[in-house]
Length: 418
Picture 1 (cartoon, rainbow, N blue to C red):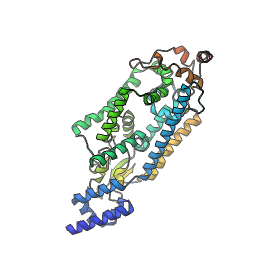
Picture 2 (tube, rainbow, N blue to C red):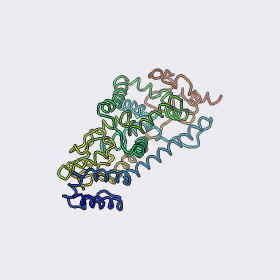
Picture 3 (spheres, rainbow, N blue to C red):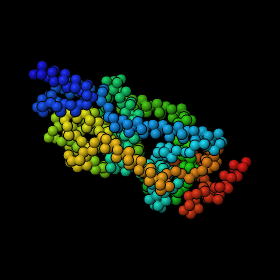
Picture 4 (cartoon, helix red, strand yellow):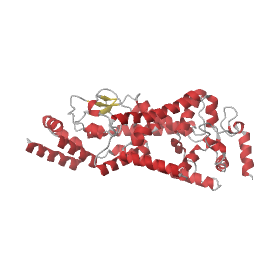
């Protein structure tokens, strides 16, 4: 029996090396496969190591790479835009609206204001558009935003792989620590939901949205990274170290956006489903899961931590045992179709926003030049979490119009003529 095990091990690993696909194990008779996967722990671990070292998920990688390039391009373009403003000249390039993806709090405030008033404000409209797109993706395709789109998620994956390279294993916190820590991001989410949806009335929402602070929140966000303080640097270094020591630390314990997408993903009809009749209980799916979900014990994965990365599906050695589907063992969603649907939703949402005129903001270059000279003023800083005081008659729109009021235009013209 030992000689048979060794022979089977050599054949399986050789085929994996040649084809790069672990699914080739299905070519063997079921009785051999069942015996090997259930009773030979060393073969199990060896196959998993081969998967980790040589297997990539091409469709997810292409989507992640595309969004990473897009994020870097937006960052460079916005940096040039702000740099030209700081030099006192009208920018030669347009402000990239996609930068508002990094303004989730402003997006949540805009969402409630939109629900209450029906006004899709034009201060940071694309922040709300992107929040709606990512929310819809989560409702339909689970937390695909986290594992297919988010650049921080990609960075966390890279750090997780580096962690395994360094330590040759993945450290996990015991449940007594992991469960309370996982609740932190939901406590943060509940705090902002309470502060925005319970405490802020329509007037408070309007005061924040049209405040000078919110008007240049994107520039303040850029300065957070380009004018980095020692405290911020130490904070980022600690988060980087924790993410290297404990894979996915930020995503698992602190990410507010991830908490929101996780809550919405409960509504998704698509789940990872396991066919118990063909499952060999090899536990490779659980070992591959970056969210530490015990996939091999679940018939249907309902966990809010499931990112729909499909690693468990890819590593499963038995065909059609694990899949992502809306109905039990019917109409499984392939990686390719998942990728196309996700990208189509993203592009369609932006296209609809552009056609509807709610993608780009209506803050002109002259107003940006006006604000950029006063960034150190009191109205451009938080006052213990409250909206900074400012001249509301000057900076808020007169009726339902969101263009400059005469007072705004007069103030800016007077300033620029000096």
